[in-house]
Image (cartoon, each protein chain N blue to C red):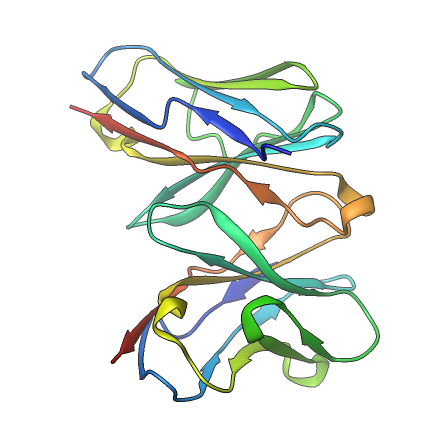
Length: 112
Length: 115
């Protein structure tokens, strides 16, 4: 079955600290992987995506993610979190076009 | 570009009433998706269209829900009759599939409250 698991429902980090959000997937074909961010009251915005090539991908707002095929993971990282990063983060997997499967989301809280 | 446009942004209605949510995708996009987001169930795909044709409606909860896309620039999601458990935020998203590498662009959502 195709699925995405984000093990952490809620994470709190201090401003300036590093961040890693976990994502594990199960997908039968070549996975195309995405991270989206949702600020309160807003729609989802794409942070980054992985299709092929270099397994470390850079995104907007200083985020990066690493694809590890052996672990079926696509974890999101940021070296230094800013208060404005507080939001909900969604990992998704899907084909090149069509239906994406989203994880349940991880809510990030940033302490001053 | 104005992005994906949804209307209304907020809708409050009474149980049993018909509700129609509207979406205008980004011009040139050939895929359109309807999602529902609740605290309990997270983000759920209800239905998606490709070139105005419904491709997968397996996420539509029940017959009370229907979606149409009469042309490339407009789609509706209708709930008739509405029930309190339909209260949620409904998002529309669009993409140009392979051209954009399936990056879906989301609208701001419609917050529906059914009393």
